[in-house]
Amino acid sequence: MIRPGRRGLAMAALAAAAMIAVAWAAHRPALRLVGQALVVEDALAPADAVVVVAGGTPSRESAAADLYNRGLAPLVVLSNDFTPDRVRRLIAVGARRLDFQGEARLVLHAQGVPQDAVVLLAVPVKTTEAELRVVAESARTRGWRRVILVTSPQHSRRVKLVWARESSGRVEGLVALAREDDFPGDGWWRKRRQAEGILHEYLGLAAIYLGISPYFN
Image 1: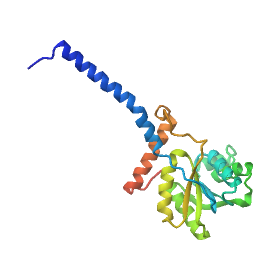
Image 2 (image 1 turned 180 degrees about the horizontal axis):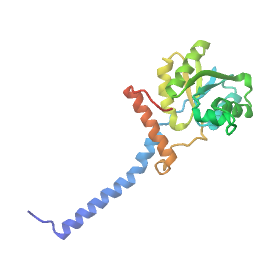
Image 3 (image 1 turned 90 degrees about the vertical axis):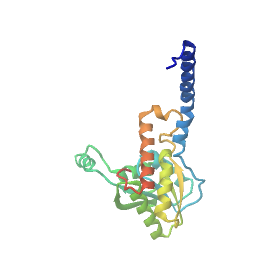
């Protein structure tokens, strides 16, 4: 067996160090693209209603109120996000005042959306798929042609995809971003909350493409 000399070992070490340096330099733009690939934002146009996709209170409600106040839609839709038993117990003993719809209505009202402009959907939902299915059914029943879907940046691609499936192309859905929510920009992989959110979204997208029923929102 031919043993490498000191010069050969040194050259191999330098080559390995160079490969590590290149990989380290390249990982940041690659990971940045991983986060940015989840973000979708549509050009907005007047719609029949603004839909607050459940989650992210109060940032999504604030974004929806801004769209309402700009005259982009006459109504704001709130889903009936499933309230866990532990939250119901907290509400019952006064440790927590309201459920999702109640909290969301307070935020909307505080930012200029009157009560008669808020549409409350009755069917409890646990997942984004179930939620947008109920919204799409309600939109078709009411004869709506276009809605604006307000969600967080990292959730936007999944919302866009799910809406296309649930609406069957019969109601246009424009995605608007709640920019106060965490944006998956540079360095998201160093922030636990953002990293968990990115993983959550990719698992959700994988479940859609694989035809697996999701167990999370």
